[in-house]
Length: 141
Image 1 (cartoon, helix red, strand yellow):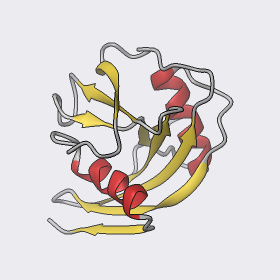
Image 2 (cartoon, helix red, strand yellow):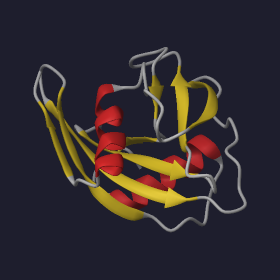
Image 3 (cartoon, one colour):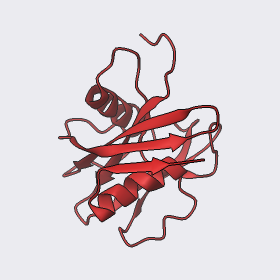
Image 4 (tube, one colour):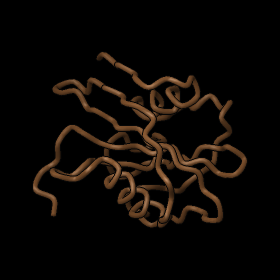
């Protein structure tokens, strides 16, 4: 049961068998029109890995994945810092479904050498952590 949102979230780098990264174009909400990884707020008293599992299922219909914790992104969003716990999971035989069409225009696979233009700032930092094999990104204003 959600009581209130805190400035803590998860984002998940989902990889397909070709090593491509899944991104969805956001709509009707925060930074509409930009691409983002599956993810969202961590509920009060919810473990971050549980939040990652829940968000991936809610947003893509994908379940039964093994999640690996990658690192943290601290993103200043003006009035507060938002902390992203970043996880990675590899898909084997499942494809994402558009389960929240009111929040996402659709899911697309991107090669790891893509420019990642128009990606949410904190999610872009998460992708860079993965690509650069790092564990922390600190994003000032």
